[in-house]
Image (cartoon, rainbow, N blue to C red; front, side, top):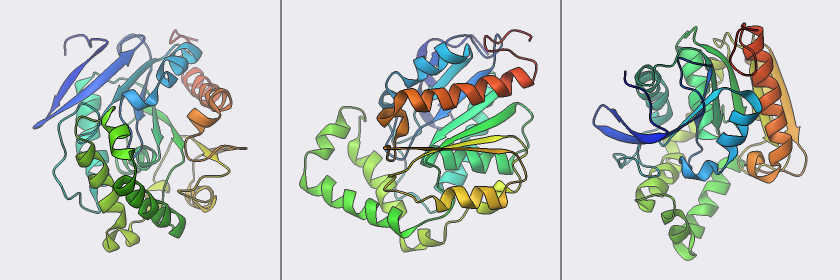
Length: 273
């Protein structure tokens, strides 16, 4: 493919997905692919991608899934398997489109679940490890209760206006995610089996006060995984430790990334170690 611009649009099937590429291209250094949360997008990562790039020397690729940011709208309603579709259908085409050669998947919340499904369902030798921030492997009561509460917040406050700063169709972004999680059929969603098929090291980072998931999520990973699992529970942080405890989270991410990439013969700057 032609060289990636620092920002632009990827055409994946009928969807146009916005992206940013920070640092060296995938043919020059390892690439960390970042997968956003259920209401996230390229812009809502803030400067975290730049900080990761500076701390690792790797290229960092960030994109907005359909329905988010400036990407094409998603077809609604989302079905309970929407994260499997993103992981097993869309993500492989994105990695191929950008010329991904080696690196890590870093996901937050829904993005962490998508990364897990991908690594558990596709034995991709290019993926050397997973960094999962506030992942979901099962649906907990705390998750559903918090998502029901935010539905009320969206209907009664200025949350829609705030989201509209980041998403060109705030309703498509919010309703697509919120309705899927509140669908009674979604209570049976469970990707814990995927963990048993992951063959690369995993780092899990979770805030101790996460209102969307308990430490049971970490316990499931420790029970199911045959691969090494590093765990960081961030004191004082909630569902977004990369925003609420940015320095601590960045250190956990970069230490794991540099160790993994160096282990595979690629130093922190992507050169042969």
